[in-house]
Image (cartoon, rainbow, N blue to C red):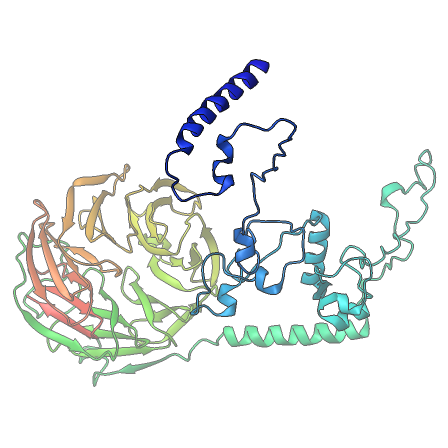
Length: 579
């Protein structure tokens, strides 16, 4: 320190010497002593006072310059009372003039700003259920300490009535348990009642009180009335003869097989060779609505029976003048199926009025009627000579019902199908019959045994609402709903013949009847477009298509004694003869 002072003094003395030399030099016009004070040596005895400098002077900061304070929007807590303007100031920059107040308000969900509130799960569920049941709940924004009527939202009058009780509090009191009669000791077998004891207030009498009896009477009366409406009385049967004389000069009726038609109708022989029908040669018209089925007279085929949707059945001549012989009237709804017995003297009709009726072909009289209150879809006489009093009908309630004509009673029910029964066909010398149904299956039954011994159903199979047995009795032709005719063997195995599948027609949705030519060389069928289709049996080739009807051609029959005569019927109400 002393050395530093000494050096400072020597420096001053040197400079003073030079100053003395320079004093003689002319002055530069500044006589201010302070100006050269730092050059002069320190006077002994003087003390130097050093001023304290503020190295961080006060400067005007941003907050002092700007008006108002900025709040961080994510701030959860403030330590001062901010003004309304501060709280609702825009986050950055000036206010957006185009935003409404609602738009500019802070939002964390679509409808506004939801504050998180911590609520017990049970409390929340309790209030939710109370609101759901009674229509009121506690206002969540009001503290739970002081609950008044204004603390509820929703149905306030309900809240007042129930005194604000929640669902869990408002539960009714449990009813007292019914007491049972004391039932003795378990050791005493005679008097012990145990759990089987009656209730003390139990009444033994099952008789209804007067009021209950009145109610019951009203209900039963309604039911009986309803039943009467549904159970329509069978329509009155009558018949109209359209020819002048029922009998000819020899006393023979129209059922007598004619011998003057140029062909022997009494023979059992079939024609040697059949040919394709080419043109229409006759139209039988008389039905006012679609024809649903046609049947030729057994063996001879000299008269034709037709069933129609106009509720009538008509009998026509096939030869000579081809007149309408007789009309059978007796069904109140469309006739679905008809079937002659073996001799042709009687026939059965099945209609949508739920009745099956037996008619005399010659007199037109209705002999008897049968019903089980279900719609019959098909009807067939047993072809055996000794069982001509029995017939079977496929019903809409999945059953095949067998009736006896003599007693008028059901003698057997075949109840295995899972859908309405569409067809019944007798095979194997009439010992068995084949049925098809809406359940897309084919079942084979022994006569009078109500269990099917063969059940044919493939996943690829469709419903087959029309089945025909071939003239030689070996094959079943089934009209399948996938627009093809399938051929099943009709003896023992009932296997599908995959080589013989007849295609090329459109039948989906219609039960178009199939038939064979008598010599088994052709297969004929109608279709949904009203066309008559003819296939070759051997090659399954579609040989010929004739536009036969304006609407669906529902049935085609090849005359059993003719080489090329085919009869078709359609939903246009016409029956046509082709040759």
